[in-house]
Picture 1: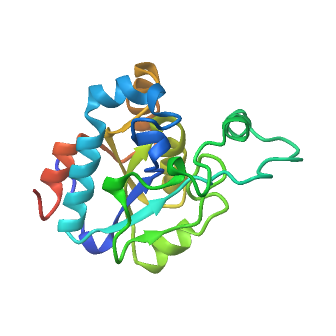
Picture 2 (picture 1 turned 135 degrees about the vertical axis):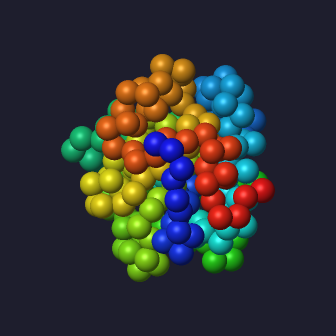
Picture 3 (picture 1 turned 45 degrees about the horizontal axis):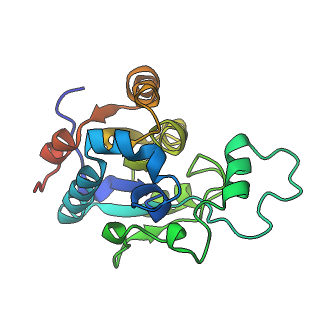
Length: 209
């Protein structure tokens, strides 16, 4: 997939779940991600991608997971296994440090924060599609966590809705290398129009760093 071209007026950077529980030492899920995140230099690449997008005047869109609140998933007919774990461990709990943005990824003026997703797709039961269409966005670059769950589900849904989808293989992470391989080598090529490294993406943007 050589030489992708991005019209900054029609491109959005989707930053998925940049919470302390995922990205910070002391976060509830960070120990499970640490090895893969270190291997791909996740934080450095997230910072570089977000910074390059801002410099290129690309719309940054926050795509946050539901922040757990008391009563979530209680009396549901069929919460999924991940939701059961969130219910048990109170991951991304509202009003806690773990449910706050990582300090390097605090929203800035002009960013869009869409409604929180309850499961894995950032589109399902949220206003993400509406916001993207209202801002004339046709191309989405999807980064954040996790590669094989929310990134994949959001990206697949985007493709189904007619968006051009770019995955950035080292600006995401998963709990195992096998999950990363599934996300980028097995599943990603079935729906993503581009699968790039951070360096390749930045080189393709009109304004690099």
